[in-house]
Image 1 (cartoon, rainbow, N blue to C red):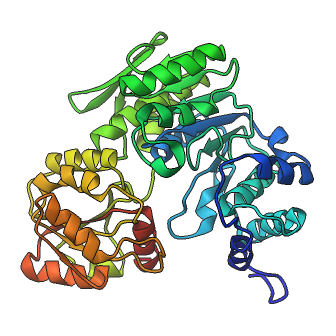
Image 2: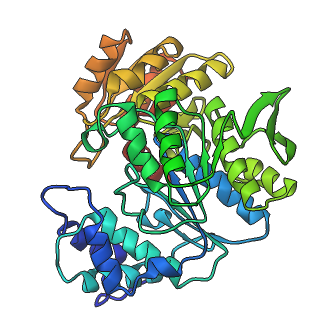
Image 3: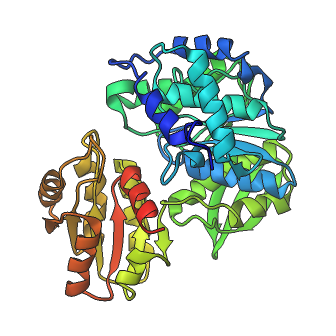
Length: 426
């Protein structure tokens, strides 16, 4: 516990929010300024694997981390957003950063920034880099927050870059075509640094290949340099060094097979053996990605209901979730859904429609950018779903339990809603 005279990390994070510029202009100038004041910690990191993409970044990172640990090595890891607590964003040599350590680096960054405008993500990324530079580890895993080219994490020269599937998202910042968005993601590619590329639409792949060629960055691309598939309940991975016959990923869904392929391509580049690659499949965990909730107050309130949680929020995520729901044993399925007002709600819900009986919409508690429940319910009706609204998730679950006590229920639509559930459900 910190004393009353030493602010907790939450208090410092609240102070940092007050520094946020009124208008977001994507630039790295604020990062370079603060990093210089901190002594340029980004230059003292263990070898970096830098991961960008629209979908699958976190899952791919989780599998790479499990594989590195399966090699008997340690790795830092940076991801966003957090779900229940900010500490989830920063792992030091495999362990979540402690409250004392987090408070110290946040306080140091706040003081060195000197009250100048800086975004919340930028200043907290500086804190993560500072903690990483001061802690011994074999690798650093950095997940891009938004885009790539001008993301706050793009201040390093990595040992390896990874680009997971690119699709339409964050158009207001990244552009309104797949090519423009792919160009932003490809901004993490560095001169001469190999890049693992997951499955891409042709328009995105062309941009990524052009960028890599211009920078002399060797490409390790799905369908060209490595292949991944499933066969008789196993994952089959093949590249120029040979074939791996592995268990399916612990993370559920066909899309996780593709993410696993990118993780395995990265691990093979790092020299991982078959045992480490197997650990990547069996030991990875990533909350709120089709996570089955089995304990906690929410589960206790409806013990016969099969309860799931997912934080996916765009059309590609909807397609992946719909495919997974279609593969599960048949059971009446209901959605409890809350989304942000910046998302393509119809595009997300359309692929889920064939697999669900109805949707109950909720507003995301404590989230200024929540889409009102009424708007989510209307969007569901517009794609042909039966829908209604509830004041909160507990009320929605009680309503579903009365209709079908043994239903399958998926709470979905936003990582912010998922984080709220993980906090409330303990």
